[in-house]
Image (cartoon, rainbow, N blue to C red; front, side, top):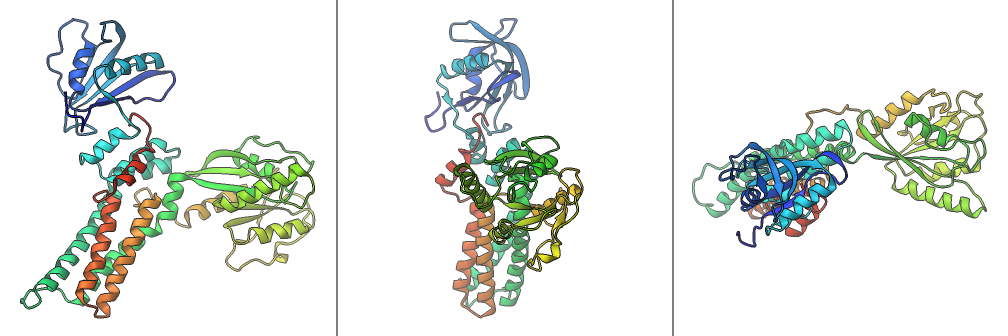
Amino acid sequence: MESAATPTIAAISTPPGMGGIGVVRLSGADAVTVAQRLFVRPSGLPLQYLESHRVYYGYVVDACGERIDEALLCVMRQPRSYTREDVVEISCHGSMVITQRILDAVLAQGVQVAQPGEFTKRAFLNGRLDLPQAEAVIDLINARTLASQRAARQQLDGALSRCLHEVRECLLQVSVYLEAGIDFPEEELDLPSSRELVDRLTAVETTLLQLLSTYARGRVRREGLALAIVGRPNVGKSSLLNALLGHDRAIVSPQPGTTRDTIEAVFELRGILLRIIDTAGIHATTDVLEQEGVRRARAVVERADLLIVVFDGSIPLTSDDHTLLALTASRPRLLVRNKCDLPGCWRPSEVKLPPQEIPFLALSAQRGDGLVTLEQTIVQQAVGEEPLQQEEVLLTRSRHQQGVAAALHRVQTAAAGLRQGIPWEFVACDVTDALQQVAEILGEDCSGEVLERIFSSFCIGK
């Protein structure tokens, strides 16, 4: 058996529940040996040698020789495997009883249960994937829209990694020139001038700034958008929720206060995953239940990514409407004048708004008038005026965003130091720090605590 440092691991790689196929995966030096003990061909001939990347048909048996199930067995020998270790996958019928019995038979051979994300962690540690690519694996598994799938696929293909490697290479060249100038000041070396080094750092700065500018769009692609509908009672919030969803999700009634709790639903809008939240009417009330609903609605206002603030255009604005305008003034919001199918009772121009804010959108949630414009505006607010580009290199995780921002700060400080004539020793420290930030994003110099946090978010079996 192998050393305890790198034990063979196994797990059920298919989701819990019944299905047509279940998969039990093994990885490690003993994976093939264990498979040979548990897998029997119909001919009864022993499996003396299993060829790599070939599928075998037979039966899985337990330690007593009892057949568990007929199955297909695939061997992928290192280094041409997902983990760059010997990997064996057993495909059986998708019964939880069968997959668990096969896993139990494997574990009885001294194999350890894989921890969440351990297969991908080994792929990272063995150099098959860098850290952004490993993170893209779980993003690909969790993708719920075409846009999020494409963003994860692009990162898994190495688009972000290639960009960061180019940044690192440029910074390394600058670092080499700085260190040479520091260590051999009296030698007649053909070194770039400070002006030329500034130009190189400026090119890196431009790349990092471009990357940072994609984070808002990238985060929306990966995580979706929390969109809250707020307003005083009976302005049509629930009707708007149903209109956006295309079906009745919330109870609609002319009786004010019908919605007393938040109602949530998830749907895709033009490639963006939206978690839409309908809230209780925000207004002054002495009713204990309504007060709790108002409290929860106010909490949603603080945490939502975007608010749709709804007003009734068929009756005069109330003190509660003006309170709501003030309450949401500091939050990203769209203002909607609902019930535009009825005679209007006030003009949007009567409400003073900041110059940069989008004016009131006219809407009839009941008839659907203005719904397309509202949807277009939601998408623009979520991802900006530019359409989502399939080939755009995106930052999708806060870890990447924070690392790029820190590297950018060091690059800007280094360039400023060169312009001001600061000794190269101090400039070199800033460039080294920038390199450190890039290395941490790529996982080349990352603490064990960070790795554990990242891979613990994976499902078991991947």
